[in-house]
Length: 260
Ligand code: NAD
Image 1 (cartoon, helix red, strand yellow):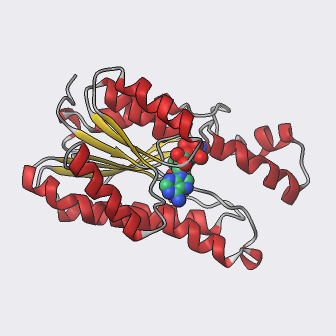
Image 2 (image 1 turned 180 degrees about the vertical axis):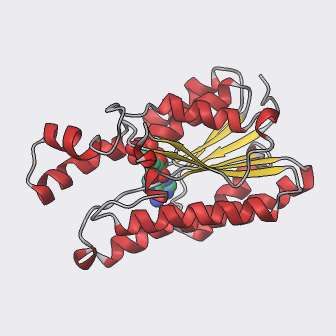
């Protein structure tokens, strides 16, 4: 229980990777603020189940594309659980379209959530981390923070952006006991991936199986999806003292994708 007494804010933790990270941090003793969208009853059931492990677990459904909502989320986390020690910027969305047909509102949404929200959570949580002389900032980036794919201009731009933001923050707080890193998964089997299958089937005229094997896993040499628990395991390691020298890193977990 090495995270006992620590407060973790995990954005986008009602589903997929974020939920696995929240569960894993709580199982190591952290108190956790969950965030994200979804069915109220099932979110409450998840919250209660994680809290059953003996740590404090809250939930706030802030829409992180709204900077004022992010401010309220960080304030509520400090008031109800504690000042944030571990910040996991994980909420993210995807939209797939050629750049010259990319809907402007979708561009703005992807950049606001996948990049600007992390700027806001970081700027709002850093002062308390500096005061304590300890902090962990973990950003779920993507293989798309290192390489591109067609039809994902906003996502690739935002993910490259968060990798740059992470490096900058790491340098600014290098002597303050705070680390900032990206985890960059390849394709992880989550609702985000599942939901882009119909769009890709339509834009490329493929079957579901073809999208899974020939598009999604085409670039992943292991030919296996990454699991949410593998990503959560790395996030947990980054919280350990043994990881104190890892900062400003962009850690790939992509089945060899970006080795090519
Ligand atoms: P997911 O769709 O399962 O989860 C996304 C989470 O973000 C959900 O909790 C959702 O409610 C929340 N969310 C969406 N819009 C929000 C908003 N406006 N405000 C607050 N919360 C919001 O997706 P996932 O696959 O678990 O993705 C999590 C992160 O991992 C994302 O940043 C994604 O880009 C990244 N990622 C995913 C994969 C993958 O293959 N699944 C690969 C690389 C990176």
